[in-house]
Length: 404
Image (cartoon, rainbow, N blue to C red; front, side):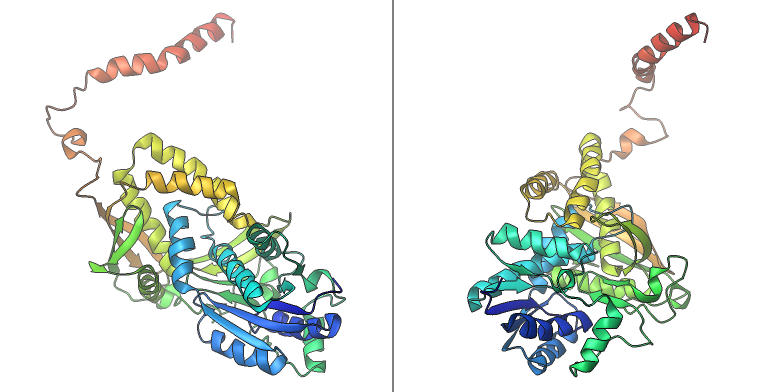
């Protein structure tokens, strides 16, 4: 890659990318454009821009991608009921492709020869960034310093930063790394690498400790149209406003904390701690409305495919044809998912308290009632059971006939 003269770096302002900015300048002799995508991480966006210029970037680009992130990445995943390994709502996994898209766009617009990222050679993010970049621009060149340099770990990065006068964001008070966006905050590394050690006190920032949450529950109603959340407590909202509002409400009640050991795509197990308050409410509310509006076999088929969908997103295949094809399937079956769900929030828990769909509900109280009705003839169930048991009776007769 000796012909690389300009690089667009996915820059967060954290330890790794700050060191990488300086390292690329020294190792490649290239100009560096720092690119920071605003996906809802807060004040650090403006801080990153100033820090990048102070560290030697020739240009610092910040781009507001919050609306695109929620509308084109988070909401499609909600429609697919995507959850990785039973717990993880894919906050980081969904942010990487939208950041990659912006990164490639910035490279084209600035005439850069390559892009770079700060993901390590052990993690999932290197795969997500690079698969997305190659899917969008097949001839793009990628610099991944963690796979190239001789710095062995965070301690070496700290030493490098101190040598080159780069401010260090990791302190003894926060011996772990974080990654934030509008959907969640993730915590990993440092003291969290021991899966037996609990999260340190005061670590969480989006949610209060459930023990300190209000002693009275709060009920929140989320309205859906064709699988998309469109209102909170009867107030119509755009996607970013929906998620932001639910984050605030859920965070007040300590909702959405998850501590898991997950299976990384590269083959190792990793401990991750996440807080996803608004996303947790959306997940439960969406499934509540689906329970009324989706046909049984359609819902069961969707659930079979949801795990596969989540794996695709987790592993970095957002822009792959199989994810896009599966999204079409998911979105098609979401057409009748219109209605409202009422969620009870209390001491870290989000539970379904009610659901209704006036236009697409398949629930028929006249059929399911335990009282007298003229709709369902209970005697019909006898023939149904006899036919369902036919193969079981045949199998049992054969087995018993053989003396088992």
